[in-house]
Amino acid sequence: MSQTTVAVERSPRRGRGIGPAVPAMLLLALFFIIPVFSLLLRSVTEPELGLQNYGELFATSTYARVFFNTFMVATVVTAVTLIIAYPVAWLLAIMPQRHANLVMAVILISMWTNLLARTYAWMVLLQRTGVINTTLMKLGLISEPLALVKNLTGVTIGMTYIMLPFVILPLYATIRAIDPSTLQAAALCGAGRWQAFRRVLLPLSAPGAAAGGLMVFVMSLGYFVTPALLGGASNMMLAEMIAQLVQSLLNWGLGSAAAFVLLVVTLAIYALQIRFFGGMR
Image (cartoon, rainbow, N blue to C red; front, side):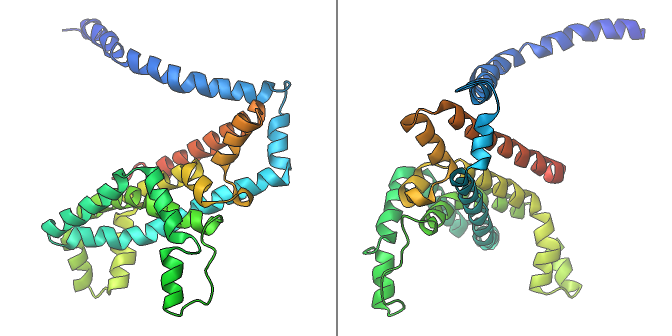
């Protein structure tokens, strides 16, 4: 059979292969591409044509402070969740399966519990007369209640708790896939626990950590409920600012510019993750 005949036979299959993707492409265009294009269009046309919204966004100290708060909290939350998630994921991987299933059930239940209910629970725990301050004062560790709500401290604590499962789950799956004999070989070669963690476990689990860290960082950048309830007006984050610009001030141009900047940053971070960890499996 000639190459021409093979090409003729394959071409209908290639044409049929595009058909199933058309609904998905239409859905993507309808619910992502068109809204994003509309967002970009409003950011450069309202109140007038130009880039004045972006200029105001980056030149005004108030908006710059909001960007700083957002990226600082997202960075701290990502770092803290990774630090906490590593030992939890490691314990899940090495403990008996029955106990691991119980701990995993607790993690999943906390993850599935209503976000608003969890945030209000942290408000009760962190307030000046809450359980945490009351317990610390009874133990004599502090003489007066700590300010743990209506500031970035409360936002960081609440978001760290909410984001933990999103790091533990991919990290646990990655650590479970590591051959235990690899760590045993490192121990036989004289490596201590810290050396085995730093030179063996950490590099091998990097894809799971990167996936979880990326998810937490991106979600933290656009989080609204927890910062709005546990934070304050002086510690506003980007999602809350966008909501105020659009809903209260009806400044669609500036709100669209802020939302588009957030989208671009998110896509850039995702591209970096693909660049450095996309090939690692």
